[in-house]
Length: 180
Image (cartoon, rainbow, N blue to C red; front, side, top):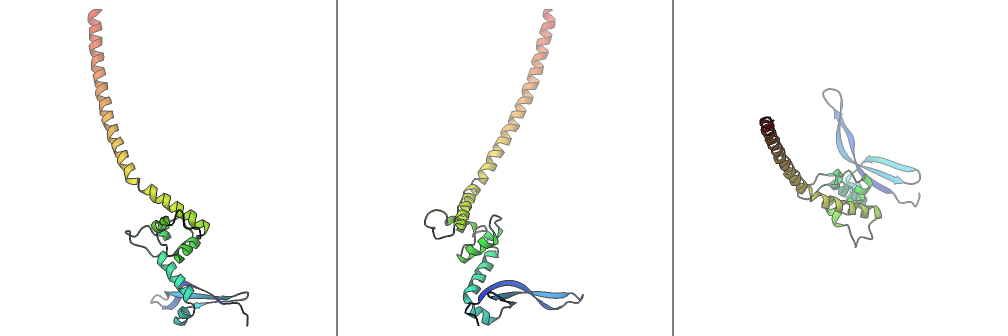
């Protein structure tokens, strides 16, 4: 046998679970494991309880990734899994660090995180900027509403001035006729 260690990775998959009344197969979601021993051996199968115990580290990482993919309540923040900026690999790296929301990622920006990979530091800065920008959203809507109301008032004033100018033109024309 080779001295190469076996690499394990857990992932969600589907297993056939009988046939329905219409003749089509039923499937159920299951946890699968991929065992690899380079250079030639790779095995993929449904995971068992013994696999969860034997490969505890990869299983814990799988559970963290699953938690990152689940929707979090709005009170906790915006889920990283729904943030279009992040890739699947970055999501997995952040899940391993117990970071699941954009707000948690934004807290990691700045000094003191020199041990984090560069791409994660850049994402943290980007998340911080997004949080800062999102604070001003309501303010801009208020400004736009105020400007719209000012425009309506100005339109009314323009109408009134137009009618006043027409009335004054009529008076001027009648005075010209009397003088001539």
